[in-house]
Length: 67
Image 1 (cartoon, rainbow, N blue to C red):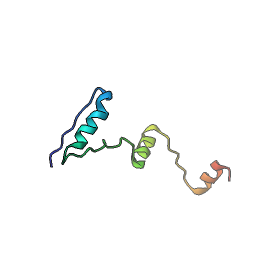
Image 2: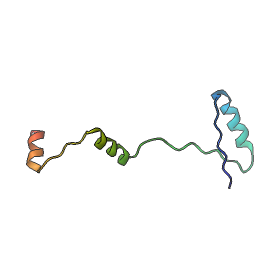
Image 3: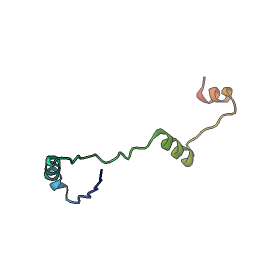
Image 4: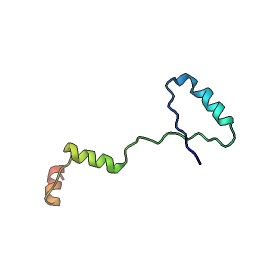
C-alpha cells in the first residue's frame, strides 16, 4: 500500500477534493493523527515546570491538606 500526504493551503477546496478522492476506487481518506498529549507527557511537563510537591510522610501530606 502506498501512502501520499497532501498539504492543502486553500481550505475552501478541501470539501471538493475529499469528494473527488473518495469517489476513486481503492483510495481512502485518513484523518491526521491527533496532537493531544498523553497523560505521561502531561506529567513530565508538570515535573519540568516544577508543579510537583513532595512529602516525607503521610502526616505531612495530611497537615498540608488540613485533615
